[in-house]
Image 1 (cartoon, helix red, strand yellow):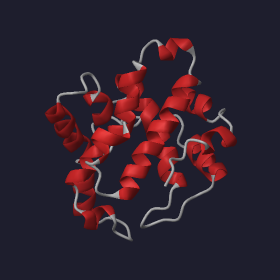
Image 2 (cartoon, helix red, strand yellow; image 1 turned 180 degrees about the horizontal axis):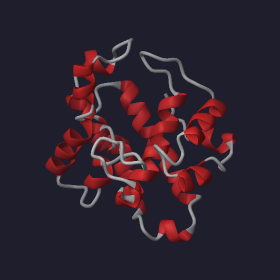
Image 3 (cartoon, one colour; image 1 turned 30 degrees about the vertical axis):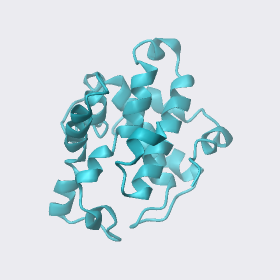
Length: 188
């Protein structure tokens, strides 16, 4: 999956993050109970995880790499990346069935996400990607914040379980060992 799609990513941090989320997502999928695995196509999930932030291609580098907090206007622009990603994916015509998963990866279980979907109305694949995306974002250095440790990431993820993230899925994800999760980091 690195070849045909990676040329889209001009920002190496975004590309690394997307590959990390893809690796984490597939590891997470392998650790899910069968009743979850039977709901999600793993090939589609793998592509959705890799492409979840492809809409950031349309976001200015000055916003993506801003060393401080985004202002209200910049944040409004950043929040469009899921919709922009869906447009890019649809234009490729290769990935049927994953656009909703990408669109809703910033939804919150409590209904306070980008599109206000709540709980089980959020596709399972989007809830899975939301957790791996959150873990990756917390544990990677960003222009405005240093990377946090695995332990800090698990603490933060557990704190938002039930409001931001699906608690049952968080319990499964946080049962995966640090050693195994660290193997998901892409080569630089």
